[in-house]
Image (tube, rainbow, N blue to C red; front, side):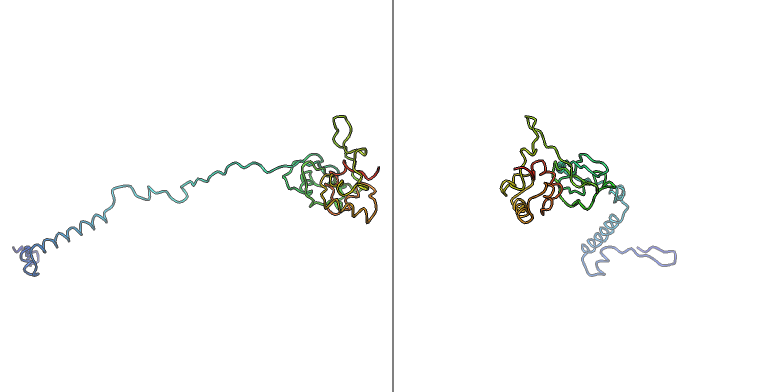
Length: 229
């Protein structure tokens, strides 16, 4: 059927049969083609339509807004501690608690540093410390460390007094190993030093033996003597 147009031209509605005749195909093929075009148009509209649901940007968390949980490590016991008695020419003499493996420099720092009269040259700041050590920091006017009184036994006698002390001038290497911190190597070094340079005038001269510093000397002092039998 012809329909007049505004410009004088006519639009002709073509039936499926006529279109099939023109294209040389069956009417069913034309119908299926038309349905395919309509389906594709609907699919495109559906894919491009504005979704009715919330904007995904409003649902998904933004970077920086998500709090990431960090696993809390299991409780680890504190590292071993040692207690050192720092005396002499320091700002704060007394007992100081330090981490295990500390050195003389750490004990001096814990004691507030060296006093003005301290004789720094006589200290080995790199010497390691052990629990219960006594660190004496000498003053330039002091020649020797003060005598350390040992622990008292049940009878009231002083352990490490000259009556029960080991004579470092007469004891053999095996006996010297009984002194605190003295192993076979240091015991042999003490005997060798004694043979080369003669008897020790005092226990303090043990620092002339390589491997014996001020800290170790303070441990040995109550248990040793250079006098007596």
